Image 1 (tube, rainbow, N blue to C red):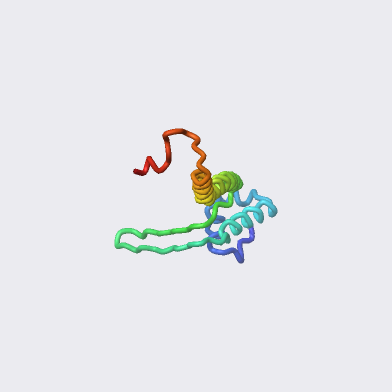
Image 2: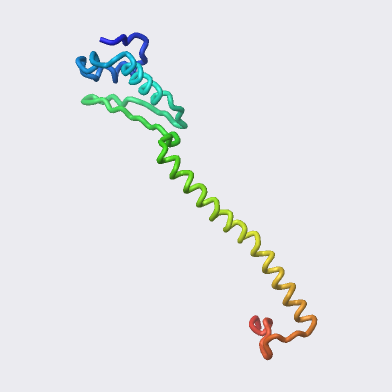
Length: 132
């Protein structure tokens, strides 16, 4: 059997679940690669990592809540696509909201200038007639 001294409890538990004949057939490089993969996945930093046991008279329930960012490449690609798409849309909405008051002020200024010069673009129709 492979040398299992110094393994953390999770890695030791996973290794003990492998059938002994399969474990004996692993080369030292394969065994160390499996151990490294298990230990790497268990060391990920998580924002929230809550683990508890709820012992009842008839059973024990394990409660685990873990929240962390997805690290798989397909998740990262999707996140990047969404972030780029929505940042462009957010920029357009923000620019529109900033430009809208300026456009309204420009329209008001041009209307007052037209009114002051006495220019009548549409005869018998004036903006102030709408509000009366």
